[in-house]
Length: 457
Image (cartoon, rainbow, N blue to C red; front, side):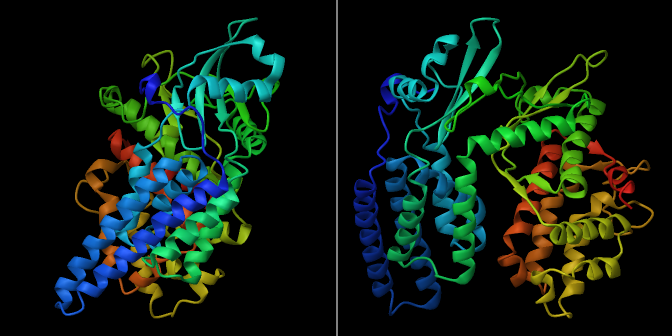
């Protein structure tokens, strides 16, 4: 954690100050961008492209540094664009935006205390709160607390003052910034994704919604000893403060995870993917943020007490309509059966697939069959790489290198242009499964995920 002197005393949420700052930076970046293009007019195509990439990287880095100075919701917008923008933003811009994750500075305790007083009033006297945050983000920070009456350990997710009200103006600011720089093509897909990010931002700051979602998932997983969902403590929840029980655990990528016996890691991997499968086949809503920070593992003793996955953050839950869910389910079942004809048939009843030429679908089906190979078996899938699946259909995630193989196949596919800007709903679902796949790869799990689909046949 940074020294107290490095913390922000307050957030600048004045739209006038923010607009002036970004407008100045955008115009300067746009002027530099135009000038760099003009100087390369007589260069070869190869030299032009080299200069173009260099200039774009320089201007993107400059703009991101200016965004980072403003903090608040505009930083979160940039982070979301880094996560989802790979399909409509130049690579140089998404790379620069990714650095925003490293620029989050905590808000100093006096400002946080002032926010807590305004939200909780006299209830604040019930709690002893650590002044140092245990987590800091662009929209909020998290502090540990103890309820004085019974010693119950809590966490308070405290939304920064003014960020919710600044979302719409900051979204317009960010969009205008990209237009002014003239570095981003203004397309229908760009506008659609921008509107989606706007909706996600508003859901992210809706703590009443997040509390309700947390309770819903807790109820679904109640009685399953493999999972822990924090309990919402209503008495200390407001529109801008979310209070829940503090749950201990170690990060997914902690070195201690790889020291666990193989079978314990296998069970954790199975539990991780099973949540994603149930979200698609049973619940119709999904945690779409694959960030490892949203999960912990509470280690057992390998005997009497089992390891448990702690599910921490329900602010990025996305609900899907039945039409899309049926398409997703059929795609997974086609992968389970490793049937290319079924995979092609599954690609119907959804605008994205219906608008696609029939001649392209078999090639896209090959990509989907590869992406779902862990659900197939040695009996029905002759294309499984040697040693990736054992006789009990346990899939070796680390050895498979599945994600890189899928990306390579997709880039070479005749349908590659359809992968370049997929519908946002499919992007959320695919990112969730990529997150689950990565979870199992990191802990080097070997799991029979095929069994999870059998009951939905």
